[in-house]
Image (tube, rainbow, N blue to C red; front, side, top):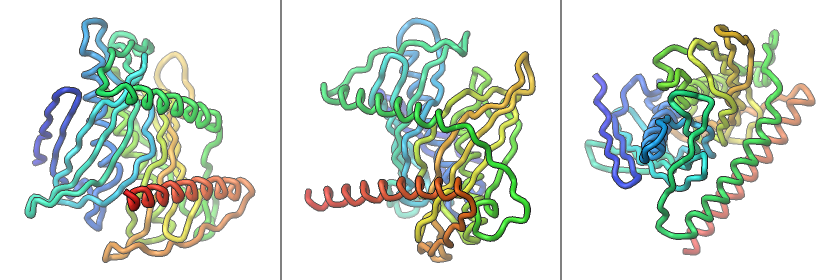
Length: 342
């Protein structure tokens, strides 16, 4: 029996804890990245929905719009307790930014370590009209510069969301008799019928449910490519372009875009088919890039087979992935140097 979550909300903070069970993890005992992402999203949804309903007025529920880049700093294992803490860090007129931290605790020794940090953006939607966005109540900042820094982050994510939406036109098609280590060899898809248990009070899919499915597909792509145990290393910004309604069929597709010596980048799309209602259409709902690493039985990083590129589009995506990889590597080095100098 799964232990119930323990939640405490105080002055814009939320704490949520639960023990990791075998069904949360892969065969090596590492908790799936999708499980962690789902826990992060649940915490963000609770605290942002609570804040958006903190004043009298039309009731609403906060819907996930975007998750900024998320690094998996350390794997979580079966038997450990995952502690999730969430805090509101900025509000605009129609959105809420939430900062989430995840820690793993060994309950036998009491040792704790940080496993994840994430930034999420939510939009409050009316309970009576899902297409109506409610104004967010004002938020009290401790220091004036916190509001200004938050405004800059808000403007940056708006621009990035627009850029991502403009490139969401292509689909991942099956390849006949693909060669090993090519894009077609490892690409994978998952088809899922959206049921009531997947949805919010509005009847639309929880962001955490979608992210967990995306991580499953990306993990299959990574495992097919390298044939070893793999773990999620990071997730680039996840953009939720359109809502997914109960009764839709969603297709989650993933393909390898870039490999370095020890990491793999996988592009993941979520496409929704509306089968019930006046309009029947297929549309791009969510997109993101996941990064995985290959591990030995001793949890040591292993070399990754290089991706074999066959088309000009694959070469273009590889170069774009390389650019993201080098940019992330440079930021990591700068952060390391900054910490060393302190």
